[in-house]
Length: 422
Image (cartoon, rainbow, N blue to C red):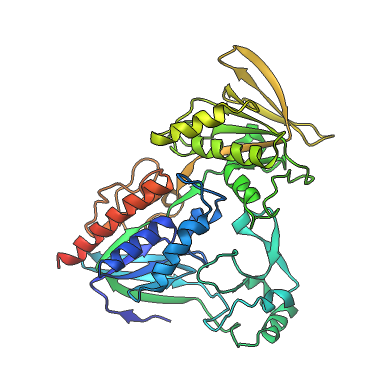
């Protein structure tokens, strides 16, 4: 199905994470009409997956709930979830954009009662928790999902679960006749805010991610520490559920490495320190060892670094870990390398290893569907080379949440200037 909607003075924001949300809200509250497009069935992006974030170390519900309320209260924002931009043509003030929306199989009548999930027997891997648990094939993406509406995985089509799910819904909200839908819109300006992907830890062959179950990533420990995560907030080893009380965190896992990510992602050091605190707060007798190249604590976050460093149960070893081996009998991990400060080699045993992987721009994996200027890593340049198309947040470069919000507010202003030039 294809239809045309005239909206020449409308701003299209691509990406519903914290950057896209900020851009959409700021532009709409300044009087612009905004279309907000997100490929996932929910808004919130990577921030929604965090346990806590800087500078206040508050849970994502703190900031996202306010933004969701602002969007709900503003009729100028129209939200498209499970939607991707498949084509862009035209010029500033008159872009023709093609959107492809995948079927959710649940319509606006959904009350989020959960009866469909109760009736469904099939399970699928939970991408929100990075596959560390499974969920029903009829599911709410996470506890504070916005929009608050269930999704049915297409794997149930043609199975007995399809009828069970339909019969369980008292509101007629389940609709298996939904099809993928193409829509063509005309917009005046576009803000690309598709965010970042965690660097693929499986590329770091010496560290055994994907082979050793007790080697996880920094985003995975965020989900383990979160109350809504796969273990209800308990930081345990994936292999056996044992409390992780001797944890190693490897900084710059794949970052600042010409064979992986040659650049620094700015936030990883502080995220690693924060995650060390998650372990220490949960288990007072735990020990955490941080293997680092150097520590980059920006601005006022230096105080947090000093606090963690002064913890007698936290050890800092200046080293680029050479390899990880697994003790097959216990599931422990043995780290091999050299402490470059003490000039000593080590073979250190840990319960759990966390890889602090860097931020890869989503645009390195999925290009903007029109020619724009990017740097050698795939980040969209500040001057995209195409008037009317602007980048925001981590689509432009590695940023923490506060900086992404600031930059996205600036992107909203640039988009408003684009539609005002007509």
